[in-house]
Length: 96
Image (tube, rainbow, N blue to C red; front, side, top):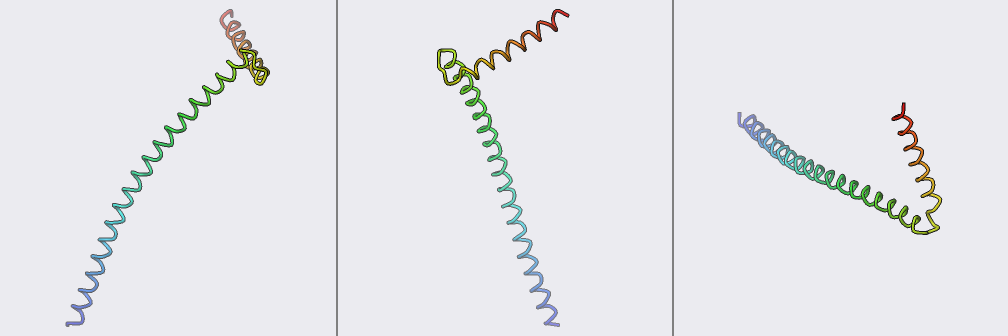
């Protein structure tokens, strides 16, 4: 009978260790999920910042070309022509 009790006690201890490890893994998983979420929010903020800086850079390139910079003149002309076509399209739609 003692052998069965020892086996049951050993099994109970192993089950308790497994349950304890499971609890630790749950806590670690929760911590990692929170860290992932925080990192994703930070990434979104960085992406938004990059978009803002790219827009500012494009505006600066256009401003420089309008001030006489030869580097971006062709690109600026194309952008202006596209804006003019868009305005013409809007005017046509309004007059119909």
